[in-house]
Length: 222
Ligand SMILES: *Cc1c(COP(=O)(O)O)cnc(C)c1O
Image (cartoon, rainbow, N blue to C red; front, side, top):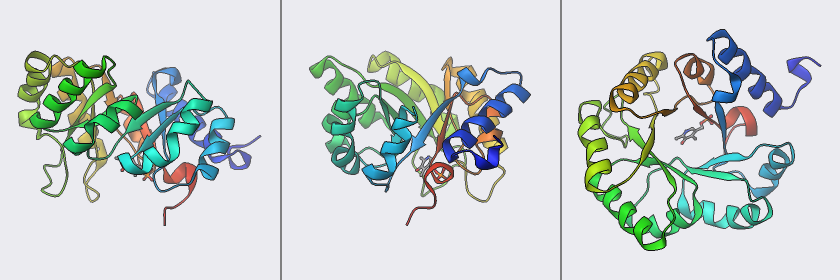
């Protein structure tokens, strides 16, 4: 079977494997997060049936309407929050998500720590970095990252497993991926969530351990 005949899922998996191999990495070291925001359960189920287990959603409320039943039916699903988290939604987010990729300010880190202490289970946490220092985008500025990771670890007792970024649309994403990889190495953070439909192969070349792919799997969003 050629790539062209394969399902979108198989095509993306094959491209990840090829990019990893070209970079001297193992495809097993790159996790595909299927971004299902705005897509209904009927669009998600075929991917679950094909074996996909990691999914990403942008909004807590939308995820609450789609995922509790799916997670009950498939206990090994890993759900990632990849959109901004309001502090008044922390309780719901900690209850539903396995990974929160968008820790982006001290007040949120503190709230997460309090909720985690209260319920006794913790989602895995990534810090979002605003690598392009764009005003309209969430995330910690690169220069503030070391101090913020320190605050999460020492003051809040949180484990930060990864960094995440969304590069500016009009810039070479490779530069942002390289920057994120450097920041992660300097901060002693092992995982890197970077790369979307347009640039996930580039991200794999730069060390992504998680790529977040929506359009290439589900088609364009309305
Ligand atoms: C929507 C979204 C994606 C997926 O983007 P595509 O271009 O559809 O692959 C990845 N990451 C974040 C944070 C998103 O909001």
